[in-house]
Length: 91
View 1 (cartoon, rainbow, N blue to C red):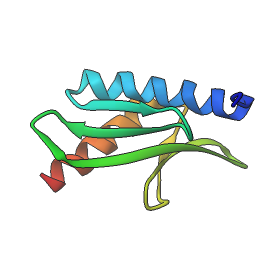
View 2 (tube, rainbow, N blue to C red; view 1 turned 30 degrees about the horizontal axis):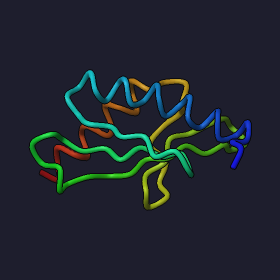
View 3 (tube, one colour; view 1 turned 60 degrees about the vertical axis):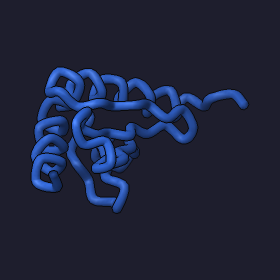
């Protein structure tokens, strides 16, 4: 199956977010189809979350598994901080 341009864009944005998360000590594994990140803390891998990336009229956004937006893909550092905060609250 050939990847579409939209999937390449998702993968690109998710890769930027993965780098930010890894700098903050989290593990981020990229699922290839459909593109999404499985994010966990190395010490608590049972507490994990999935984040994907969607295009909306205002631009591309990171999105939680339950559909709420995390933030714009233009600022992966801010999105990573929000994810770290949520995962820290769950542990």
